[in-house]
Image (cartoon, chains in turn yellow, cyan):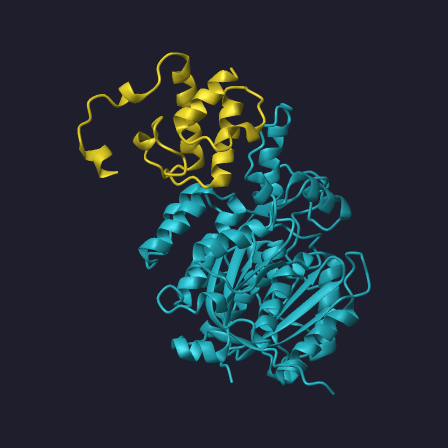
Length: 97
Length: 424
């Protein structure tokens, strides 16, 4: 955590998806911050997993539902189980848009 | 005759949040000055509730945790409080006051010997109102966590997770007697040796529109003035015309004498006996015979005589039939005259805290006993009955070694707890 906060990293946004996936990533980020507000915003990256950010199984399901609502998608929550990273979640969501 | 285990437990911690004050010390001061938290609703008509005692709480309360909380408990408590629905957050913050008051944050009871009771039912109606619109789209956007949050046991799970307790636990229901039934359940667990201590939380009772309107139509809740009528009178007054709801939450730590001695925690008071009965009715109708029977049972199981009881915290909601029935039961048990116990109605200050009322009033009883006063009954000038020693417009100094706290709920549920200031 201290690495993220103290080291003047080059361009944190460079790690973020660009194009259509960027919008989905932003929606995921907003939802994570709504469900687990104690998570530092800069730790939410495509490489991170929600488990590592402290989200339990119910939190993860809530994040998915919030994103679906935000993006006005209707996809069974079960389709999002077992995704290893936030990036994988973004990719799956993007396929349904 | 079978001899049951003693119906007694020590009180070693208290917590309370009501419209008149948050925290036991401030609550005690508010009771002494007779501060009333009920705000009448301007322009309320004969079909609308006349007023409400609102709990001035907010999500920011999660940042106002007791200063003495150890860091890890503080982190867990804050995390849970921020995320929880309002009712669960209130339960958690109130429980933490009682927890710290009982010294459980520095001198714990073994986790598997610490019991939890949440008193109240239908506690999630306010949360349900918030979530329900999300079903409207028909696109399935209902949070998975609602499956847990919609259960009353969300209170129990959240408290157990934050406090790290693994002893027995349950929610306990008894309509407006829930708080008292919950305290009785805790006394039983301690008497049966199932736990060394039990945290009892009287839960904040939501009053969503459906329930509110049904209570108005039943005639149980005071409504706005008909033309020419004045504001509703307080409980135990002839001008009362129903209860005024109050938002509130309270917690008590009950503990076995052996556990309290081992932890070197001084008791605040004791529950020495109780009576708990049904009235063979599904209605809201109170029964004088049953109300008298639970008080007599509380006295008998505590080994106390009526003359030893110096104070009764009446259930007294402000419904004319309920108040006059309780008054008649009090005269039946204690007689009439100057030597009878002081009687007041804490609901005249806090409003009717519904499921939490029994625990709110248990805290009120303990603080009045310990500080030696009987709180006022503001505005009570035309009593429903003669022969009761009702407190007046200001607090009375009084030596209160022994007191009763009554609760009566819809469905004929009646309970009375006997409190002693100086545990024997």
